[in-house]
Amino acid sequence: MPGRPYSKFTPPSLAMSELVCQKLDNDATDMLIDKWLERPHRPDSYYDWFQRVRERKHAANADARREQILLWNKGVFVPENIFTRTVDTGRLIPLDRTWVTHVYHHRSMKRLTMMPVIFSMLPELMLLRGMHDRGCDEIYVIVTDLKRHEMDQVTAYFQYVCQHISSGYCKSSVEQKINHDYIQLNYSLDRNRRTPCFPQIDLTLRAILYEKRPPFIVLFSHQTMSYSQILFANQHFVPAPDVYHDFPSGCPNPGCTDNCCELIRFPKHGAETAAVLCTKKKVRYRYGLRARPKEMCNWIDCDVCFSDDPPAEASSEGSSEGSEAGAEDALHSRTSATGLVCSRCKLVKYCSSEHQRLDWDEHRRVCVKPSAD
Image 1 (cartoon, helix red, strand yellow):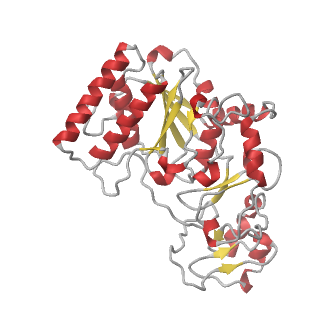
Image 2: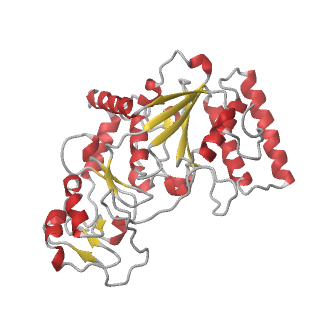
Image 3: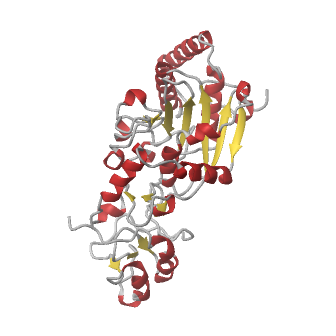
């Protein structure tokens, strides 16, 4: 067996996994998004939810540049017109950025296409991808046939394991509980003939989190009465409840908000209900991407990071005509460590008038005046 020996208490190697990996590239993702947009909009719970998002107005305050936000201010219903605040760089970017999906499944499913798996949770993946500027160009999915109560048990197991063994040492009582839960889950899933077996799910999931370090990983279930779970590496990556509190459950019924028939467990109520794997700051074995929130220049090719604690009177703005005119009148603006703030929407910052001008072709699709609240 290649790589280091498998252990429940140290990160395994992905080379040890016996699951088949099927990769869906960016072109396949684009095709799925186009098919999703071609479906009839009404009645559709997702389209209705995005319409409610369009009715929301952002306020003109400093918190609006730090908190999660989702905006659809102009244009038709397409991903390039819907913008979200990234949790890692603080940029306001559209949802049109695609990704590569790595789908791990049992060899008995090799004749099945994995595109319907991604299509069934495409809106959730688009939003989660949009929340991350970096580290989310690749999304990892493990396909299982777990039932609802089994998915709950597996989720609780991974939360407990990643929380207690990330420091590299655990007490004997913790070690006994992990061994007990592991044997119990392995016996239960093997008795019910679940595929893949639990050792392969455990090995593959922890190996992906440790070696690839994604901000989240999806544990998918194709059982009709089950749901798919999103496991977050850090609570900072969880969607904000004030933005997604009324997100649809995925049920075909447009008016359904019952979690009992949800297709994917999207954390509508924040970190309290999300499956967060580890909350410790100092760890030896880091499972998933480390949370490093920043506030950076909104131009995508810029690496300038602004100060977290700016002086009281150090902010600067462009002209009253928004980003484009603000870039042209940059000589009349005060530039400091906090950057140039778009004077129309007051949602983004730039390190220079040149980057403000370069970003205008994209930013103009979301730039509107804030509400008076």
